[in-house]
Length: 77
Image 1: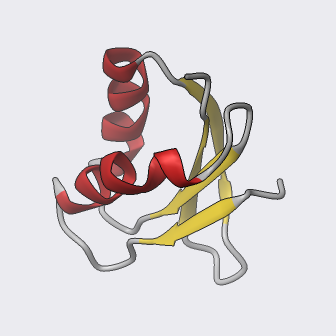
Image 2: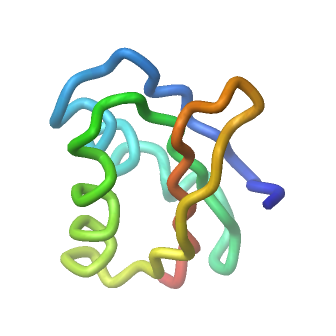
């Protein structure tokens, strides 16, 4: 899945990937995709929870080129 912005949050522990997402998601236009590449297992639940709390759309999970988990968010507002 092609993202407008990919955040490299590998080796960052909770809550740093979510803090990075919160600071940077507005860099993409409404309708755009942000991918968070994170090796911290908490990101699997934290990214969808952040989307629910912030009114953004959690698109799903895939993998980055190196096999790291990648969580995709669509900016809706």
